[in-house]
Image 1 (cartoon, rainbow, N blue to C red):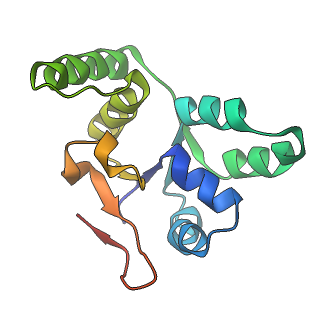
Image 2: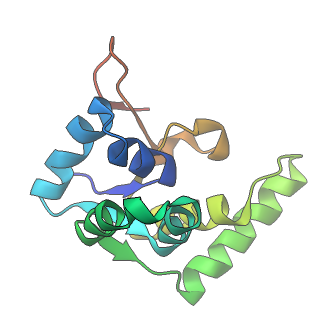
Length: 135
């Protein structure tokens, strides 16, 4: 089974009780195949209310954590430079999450598909009318 790198938006949706996020993530957790970047932990804590701390910590604890290594940082910088040459402006965090997925063999679960120009890296998430598939 493919591993998943959970983007912050999907983590937030799960924490807010969105059914698609629960249905998507539970099989990955059951197979120990759900990863979260330390960068998403940063973003979750940056936007979290104190009353959300316990559920946020539980969510993080259910995931395998991906650090940002020197190799990931270098690849992220290369991605950002490459996209900038093509006239695309991406955030450092999105480039680092993309480089994590590339180097570790994950696919990214995100609704923010515009943040990741390489669609091969992404899962297509289910809406009410579709099944979860890869791009």
